[in-house]
Length: 181
Image 1 (tube, rainbow, N blue to C red):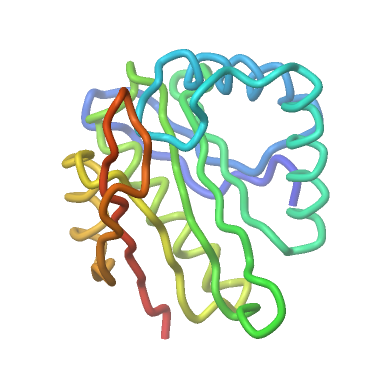
Image 2: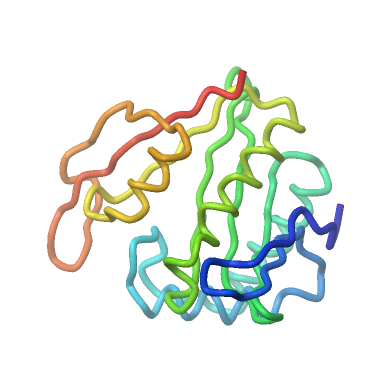
């Protein structure tokens, strides 16, 4: 599974994009990305850059979970540069047929259709694992992401008001689901 290419395409901005599973040599790209996203303070759960040890622990767990088919993890490279990633984590116990999903992209690569293609690839990969339902959450103020999710068929389950502390405010968290059968 490691480094298996899932999709190649040209972005709306004319860039060559490769979506693939990670390899153990991708740690430096992942750590740099996590630090950038954490510093950007954008619409992700990470609100500060991780330490190298924290990211290394996450990375090792992610590689193991992909091998064990407990997670799907795709990396997006644009013209050879690491642009972002997406994941689906399989549920546990009575939720084993479900997956929770999320993506994030560097700011320079947003708006070119890469996130949409990454989501489509994650959905396709989730089907190959036999998952029946995907879920995700989103900041209610992240209009571009909400648009993509709804365009891909995700249905809104509801909003939890004030669930996310963000830049001195409490923002609603939108919950979505997508049946895969």
